Length: 432
Image (cartoon, rainbow, N blue to C red):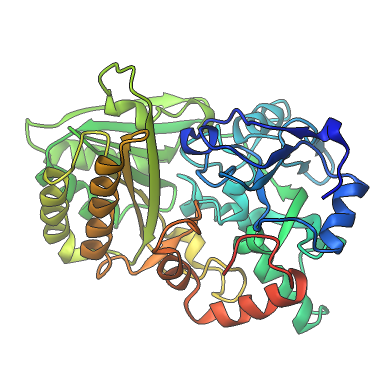
């Protein structure tokens, strides 16, 4: 493989400790004609080529693989005042997107973390505002990139005049782009900047069940997120100046027990949301930890809520260490309104996205195996209630990759695989 030496680094500094501790074959910091030539002539080895934008996933770098690091040389962001749309490259993190949009009184439905990159949008993009504004992929109006076979493309959101093939390509890119292409630019719709009304609660398991049960009847302008480690922290996140949001919060506070510690306050934007993970309050340690995360998706829990919370309480008590945890975000609202065949995020009737985090001291295989076994056990136990998966992270290196892919795409998977065979025939990018 021949490349300009100036483009190649031998290590990578990223937020994800598994990726950072890897020894990649090399790290490329830009897309040039040399690289495009190698893609077209199928000379990248071994496969897949890994792509880094935010650097928060365990597969943005790996032992012996090449990584294309887009953070430094693709930080383009431009707001168009007339259309209220924004164009951004993969070097822009979600907090950076909010910072730029705030200058114009606009916003975008980012997720619970502002430190992630374009992968958040490309894999679906579940936000605390998805119930009122839709998923992040629903905001895309144009996609630019390079197919796995090395050809550049620019594709606009299809309409009735587009062919079936063009609509299938759009569907594949919206939610499954990391399997098909290297994305170099997105054009997105934006939303008016709104203050947020927050309900914060530290609460016992029974009250979490009550809160979840109530949240399933909340208006679309508010959603629930919670995290369960050594204690349970929950947040209602709603648009300000909405009486229904205030009523929903007050109903929970008035019906909850004295075991709940609840408060209501306002923040100026999604960027100012409390950091859900920081509520874990891990003890200071010099030990470096690795993590893997699996996200599930499923329908409303309704009368099963109390049964599910008892089950989760048992699973939490079985954790191999206190850095393993279970958390969840609420979906529904207008994100349910899109047709299932619009995008590769097929779980349009989902109400909950629980995610399971397994953690272990780096280089400790025994605890790693125990933690991943715990993760799989939690997945097995929650799967009847949340049968789908959300691929915010990919796990080709783990034995349950095929199970995760199947649960993410279900009946759409064969069509997605056919599309991949056309645009990435040599399997340059992660496999399906």
